[in-house]
Amino acid sequence: MPGMRKSAHYELEFTLRRVFGKRDFRSVQREVIEATLDGEDVFLQAATSFGKSLCYQLPAVVDSGITIVVSPLLALMNNQVASMRKANVRVETINSTTTATNKKRINEDLQCGHPLTRLLYVTPEYCQLDSFRKLLRVVHSQRELARIAVDEAHCVSEWGHDFRPSFQQLSWFKSEFPDVPVICLTATATKRVRNDIIKTLGLDASKLKMFRMSTSRPNLHYEVRFKSDEEDHYDNFLSWLKHIHSKRSQPDRASQLASQNQRPDNWPGIVYMLYRKDCESLAARLRSDGIGAKPYHAGLPHTDRADALAGWVANKEGYDVIVATTAFGMGIDKENVRFVVHWQIPKSFEGFYQEAGRAGRDGKASSCILYYSREDRDRALQVLARDQQRQPQKGAGVEDQRQQMIHRLKSLQALVEYCESTARCRHRIIARYFADEGETPCGMACDWCRDARGLVRRKEAGLQSEEWISTQRDLGRYDVDEYD
Ligand SMILES: Nc1ncnc2c1ncn2[C@@H]1O[C@H](COP(=O)(O)OP(=O)(O)OP(=O)(O)O)[C@@H](O)[C@H]1O
Image (cartoon, rainbow, N blue to C red; front, side):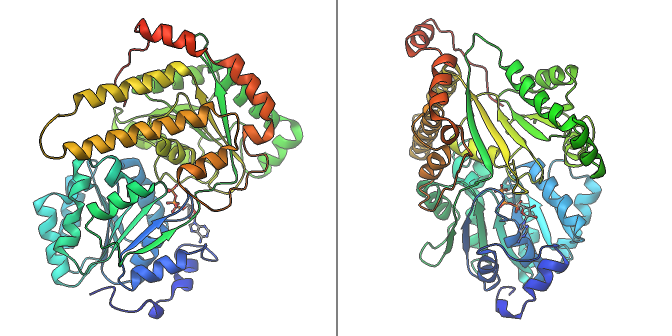
């Protein structure tokens, strides 16, 4: 069985340089890779942009057999597949956009029992199909099923209990193939979520190799901007962006950028919205003001989404800013994302950290701005209350769902505290949420550390008072649409 060979036999450094084009391993990458190659089950929790994917991609290249990667989002799968293909690794994905011809070709590769495919990205829903399971049994019988990687493993806990129950069925892998190592990777898991993932996947906690790294992203500049329903914060955002463009357009800077083949207005970023319809209208509004913006959400045709992602990744003119729902985010890897803006308070603390984590993956300073209003806070709480009412009151899984609701509420409350806080470094607040005891270097990389008094002033001027909010709430002013 792959994984029985000891990792010492593999040319890890050579493959890192030759195939992945990296000079050195980052901290613990080597240890994680060695553990999974030695056949251990592994749990890796590390900050966004740490380089978790390499920890299953490199073993897939050096080891024999195929690695199945369970991945939650289409954009993430396509992004990863594209980057592995650039490195000439045989990688495939089966998802809703795979053509019948390609699916047939991939299935035939599996059916022969000795697949040439090194990595196969699939959704948890696909893993439930009998036809796919049958093929995996064939591969396993030939000792060619190298390992199972569960990417963005927190989804097992966060989504598995309600709208994507297939995550809960992933225990099938361990019960069917106990000898095949599993590697779980996530940037965001509280202790409860970690335990839930381990239990759900049927892993033995006492044998599991656990690697927990810091959540800290010191190059991200966190900032909360305050707003209310009374005013449109579009102008605030637009003038901020235009100011950056104009600084980059000054003659010296512009000629420097031109010599590097860069445009002054290529300041790539993502604006996150809660509602699909708002993505299109905001992108159109930005375009009418001269910003190259494209919408991205699950309701758009696949071709439009693929075009938006490809143009943005390639820094193409007209594709500088993606206005997206959370369908775009988790795991997306583009190195020069200079800003992530949340147009409203996101649904969870984890979601906020994940999405903000798309910024600054090249290590350079990048802005993470969250526009916060108390009206949006109340809307988010209303959505939660409504979802709670819709839950079944009896039957299997009720207790799991109840616990899940409690977690969602706690996570949202923690994010509200993050937004309302004027007493602590934002990097520190994030570290505390994830019970991360390591260093949280900030310097001036958050609005509190930069100017705590100014923050208090802006908060007082920008937010509606709690009295006003509660009166409006009683009048039913914060009725909500469905989220994406
Ligand atoms: N050892 C390394 N040296 C240099 N760059 C690396 C190394 N390992 C990974 N990277 C790069 O770091 C970037 C982030 O890696 P990756 O996408 O795997 O992050 P991640 O940990 O999965 O983050 P997220 O949780 O945000 O998805 C990629 O561009 C990758 O090529």
